[in-house]
Length: 220
Ligand code: GTB
Image 1: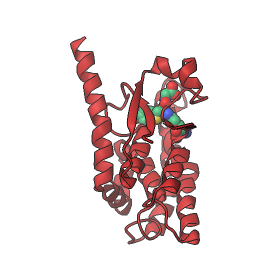
Image 2: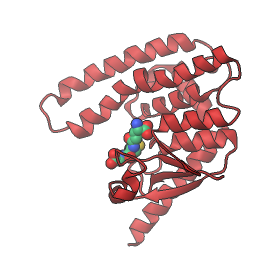
Image 3: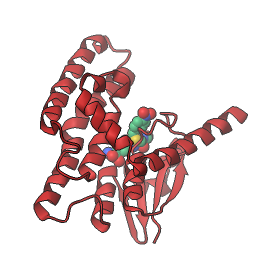
Image 4: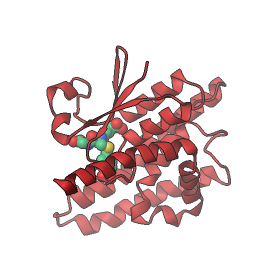
C-alpha cells in the first residue's frame, strides 16, 4: 500500500529542506518506497481532521492502511523497520544505529532549536543578545563531541543508517548560522548525506512544492 505523508502547502523555509517532512521523504527514497503527499496549510493543521492524525497540529504525518503516525523520528523508524537499507541486520549494530537516531533528536537537536527560539520567539526580549552566544557555545560543545566521535569515518557507525539520516538533517539546520563550517569534518559529513541520490530526490520533491506555492502566491 502506498503511504501518504503530509507536508507544508507553503513551507516557511521556501524549500530549503528544513521542515521535517524532508526526513520522511528521504527515508522513503532510501528504501525505494513510493509515497503520496497531502499538502496542508497552517489553518488546516489546526482543524479537527488533521488533529485526529497529529495531536499537536503539525506536519509530518504518515498514513498507511489502518496505521496513522506522527513524529518524524517515529515515522523514519517505522520505515526503517519495514524495509531493508536504513538499519543493519546485526542486532547490536541495529541498536547502535537506533541510538544515533535518539542522539540526533535528544542531544544534538535541542540546543540547535534554541537558535530559532531566541531569534524568532524572543527576538524582542532584552536578554536576546546575551543569550545567543551562550546558545552558540552549547552547540559548539556538542559539535566538538560529535566530530571527535565521527573522526575520519564516513558515517557514525559503519554503513549509512537511519541514525545518519536524522543526524544529517538536524545538522543542516545549522548552515545559516555558520557554526557547521567551524567543524569541517561535520560539514563534509552533511555534504555526504546531501550527495546521496535519495536525499537529492527528497529535496527536489519538497522544493518543487515550495516553488509552486511561491508561483501561486505571486500570481494571486
Ligand atoms: N517533533 C516533531 C517531528 O519531528 O515531527 C516536530 C514537528 C514540527 O515541528 N513540525 C513543524 C510544524 O508543523 C514543521 S517542521 N509547524 C507548524 C506548527 O507547529 O504550527 C519544523 C520547521 C518549520 C520551519 C522551518 N523553517 O522554516 O526553517 C524549519 C523547521
